Amino acid sequence: MTDQDYINLINGSYLIAAVLFIVGLMLLRTPATARTGNRLSALAMLIAAGVTLVDRNILEFEFIIGGVLLGAVIGVVLARTVQMTAMPQMVAIFNAFGGGASALLAGSEFIRLADRGDVPEDAGATIMLGTAIGAITLTGSLVAAGKLTGWVTQNPIVFPLRNVVSGLLGVVIIAIGVFLVFEPINNEIMFAVLVGVALLLGVLLVTPIGGADMPVVVALFNSYSGLAGAAAGFALDNNILIIAGALVGASGLILTRIMTRAMNRSLVNVMFGGFGASGVEVSGVDGEVRPYSSVQAQDAAMMLGYANSVIFVPGYGLAVAQAQHELRTLADLLQARGVEVKYAIHPVAGRMPGHMNVLLAEADVPYDQLYDLDQINRDFDQTDVAVVVGANDVVNPAARDREGSPIYGMPILNVDHAQSVIVLKRSMASGFAGIDNDLFYLDRTSMLFGDAKSSVGSLVSEIEDL
Image (cartoon, rainbow, N blue to C red; front, side, top):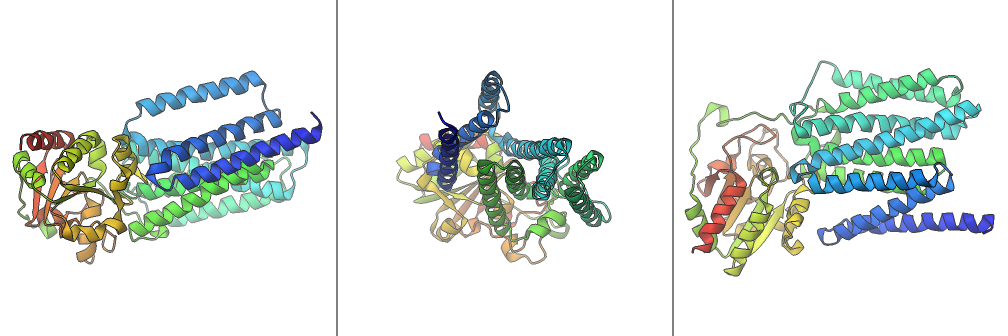
């Protein structure tokens, strides 16, 4: 094989990987094709990583094969053992690994070029950018994962002048980065300072953000990890890393925009507003104790079994209870009785983007029964029964009706427009926003208390006996 043939083979492999990345990303747009898209993207990454390692002669073949096998084993174990309730923090950890890997790549390239005595300014600029973004993503995503797991308090950790301090740290990072672009030789200590300040900034950016905003944070750091990868690609002059990083960065930014629109909040407000305190239980408005109606499984089953249309509204409580399979069984029983069944999915339901879609896909819920907020909201007026399973803030009418509420203006699912509402919940506790839910106190709402899995199981048993 001639040198030109070898170059053509490498470039052709990169082209195939790039096409697979793009097609895979396109297939991720809908649940029906998401699994295929994920497999194609994984294949693209395998091709890209393998070709790069061989082309750059970075490692011996035994190390490459060993790394692939080790990574495959870890991936399979995690895929089989991580519960759906832990999937959001797993995604956050993956973002952290992506950012950390990009920072290591950029940093190692800086050290290599500095030791050689020649760090071109264009390469130096991308190295500083990739290192800073990657380091911020690493610690920020780890803090987000800690909040999602409960290892770090989900309440905002705020302190005076926090935004000023974060701004100053950002200025320090920029100043050191610019200095190192023009004076890179024998300044490894300054580079270490840049890394340390970026790691600290990642922590300070996320600690003031409450648990309710973690879906947006996860999406944003997903974008950051892609941007860091693209910057590292420029530093290494690796086209496939640039393409893959740019795709991840752009899609993450688009997803972040979708999430903030779904919450009717700006990204600046999410990152610097300190909203999202959790664990606050409110019994009423201004201390008022309001009456509510509860229902037993038998009566709730009667309502569902003789309805013409039912809309299920899943939330994080469904994931906690691992009740998705029981919910699918309930839906199948209702459909067998001639009931029209749909699922309403709010963009920020759960603890990560697409959490409910992934959860229901695990139970093989038909994709054509899943509807997003804009598609389903007009149907609630003609729906006999809406069943809320573990959702809270995304169905709270206060977002629409009560000015001054922390969630006022946030688009919600119009569950309160249904003829009847059944809410499956453990208690009357508030959601992540820390405010009372007006839906629970409506005359048309009935509360079915208990663990979602056992409650849905009871409904299944009762409907089978109808």
